[in-house]
Structure formats: C-alpha cells, structure tokens
Image (cartoon, rainbow, N blue to C red; front, side):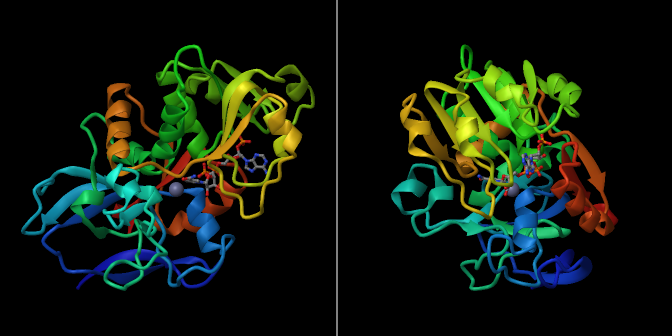
Length: 346
Ligand code: NAP
Ligand code: ZN
C-alpha cells in the first residue's frame, strides 16, 4: 500500500477535508498515475449528498482524471512513465460479457466498477480523482493527446464522452438539428462536439444569461426555456435533443420540440423519476432514450477527435479547499463551465 493525499467527505453533505488514503501496490497490469487535475461532475455532488441513495464514506469522488504516468507494473505494455493519461468513470468490468466484448464496458452485464463509491475487484471501496495519485488497470486508462492541456482534458473523461457517445450513436452531423438542454459541464461539451460534428446546434437554457457563451462555443441558436414563447416557436423542430439537466423537467414540453422520428436522449440523472405521457411519444413516432458515458475505446476516439478539432473544456481551476464552495455553485447553475481541482494545491 502507498499513502497518498486526498480530499474526502466523511458523511452525506459533510465538508471535504484533506486526508490520507491508501492506494494498492502495483499489480502487473497496473499503472500509477500522478493526478494533475480532477474535474467536478454533478454526479460527484449527487453521490456525496446521497441524492442517489447511500454512499460509501469516507468518500473521495472524482471521475474526470488527467495526469501523468509515474510507474507501471511489470506487464504493462500500453503506457510508459511520463505518458499523459486519463481515467474516467470506470476502472474495471468483467471483460467477458457480450457488452464488454463489444467495447461497451459501461454496460457490463456484471456491472462496471465505478472509479469511486464502488467495490473494486480487491474487495476494497474505490476512491476517485480528488487525490494526488491513483492506481488503475491499463485497460481502463486512456491516452491524452498532445495539444490538449491536462486541465482542459480532465472534464472530457466524463462530460466529453457522455455527450460524444449519444451524439455519435444518434448520428449528429450535417443536416441534423440537435438541441442541447442545459449549458453546464456536460452541455457545453455537447455544444462543442455537436458543432464539430457538423450538426445545427441549439442551446435550451433556463435564461439568456449564457447566450453569448453558448454562441461562442459553437451554437447556432440559443433559447430561454423560462420564456413561454420558446416552446411554441420551436415545436417539432429537432431531430435529436440531449437533455443534460440534473433536475426533473416537464418532459412532455421538451418532447414536443422533436419532429417526426426525433429522439430525446436523457443523460442528466435527476434523483426523482421523469414522467412522460404516452401521446407525447406516439404523436410523432418519437423516441425517448438514455445513454451512459461511453466505452473505453470510444473514450479514446473522443479524445483524439477533441485534439483534432482543438476542443477542450472551459474551466475554472480551484484548490482542494474550494470544493464545497464549487459544489454550491454547480447546484446553482453558476459554473462556466467546469470546475477542475488542481492537485498541486493539496
Ligand atoms: P451541471 O454542470 O450542473 O449542468 C446542468 C445544467 O442543467 C445547469 O448548468 C443548468 O443549465 C441546467 N439546470 C440545472 N437545474 C435546472 C433546473 N431545475 N431546470 C432546468 N435546467 C436546469 O451538471 P453536469 O455535470 O453537466 O451533469 C448534469 C447531469 O448529468 C447530472 O444529473 C449528472 O449526474 C448527469 N451525468 C450523467 C452521465 C451519464 O453517463 N449519463 C454522466 C455524467 C453526468 P442552464 O443554466 O443552461 O439552464
Ligand atoms: Zn461525471
């Protein structure tokens, strides 16, 4: 075991405090990563505040990890000391089921092993990126291309892949009218990626306060959902809507914005159920779907795509002591557009 510094919360809604945690000794396939930056995802907040159910405390969240390889196990051939690497939301899966074999490890039939708040193969709780180091099997590590700063790359490991995967799956590209609901961490990467894929992109935000940002991120149109006229004006006008909102929305109203055969993909994961009247789907043969992060292979593809198109996250870098304050600001939709913890401040 190796002692490393981390920020942990001791109970639901307890403040984050600097502490020491243990990382396992390197197995033959393991990579020791010196973490440079860790993004704060709204999922960290849902988990730490037990909005999704009981969590394992002390909790060290963080599944948007970017850093540099410091040491490798004897059998590691994918990475070498000094490589720039990332780790996202999972650190293991069964690797044998049909979904793992298809490169969709996030849908592992035995359940993927989350980067934190899960039980690892060694029987110990997993602890995430709000720490100086992490040990991860090489198969769940991705390479961060030169050209993307590690700080701007960290949020791609969750926010980036969570939008890239459904945008690719549902064919966002030239001629497709795509709406992104919620301009937060996920949403702003959705705008950048959908634009880079060639789609016509609309942001649906609560107010117009982020309009200038949205347009400069690559959106073609920007509407306030707090304005009653928006829903009438945009009725039936999208092929694909990706809903990134962390709270429940009146789905019927948003579904009415889809045209014939349009699809609403939910990536936002509010604690309360979403409800949909059948006629909102029947009317235009609409689809309502969900999507969870993306596989390891696709995460690497996304990073390469972002490097090629010069895309990184818009970030506000914070210290370990500012995590609680950052959580409150995320919940208040006051993040532009991802908080990233600098582990050099630990
Ligand atoms: P975030 O940065 O807080 O962004 C969410 C955005 O939703 C806010 O910035 C805000 O945008 C909008 N919003 C918030 N509350 C709202 C409300 N009551 N009504 C309408 N709009 C509201 O969060 P995030 O990190 O992007 O995560 C978003 C959600 O995705 C979370 O539930 C998270 O757990 C989930 N998630 C899912 C996956 C997956 O694999 N499916 C992966 C990561 C995260 P505006 O200010 O523009 O309105
Ligand atoms: Zn996340």
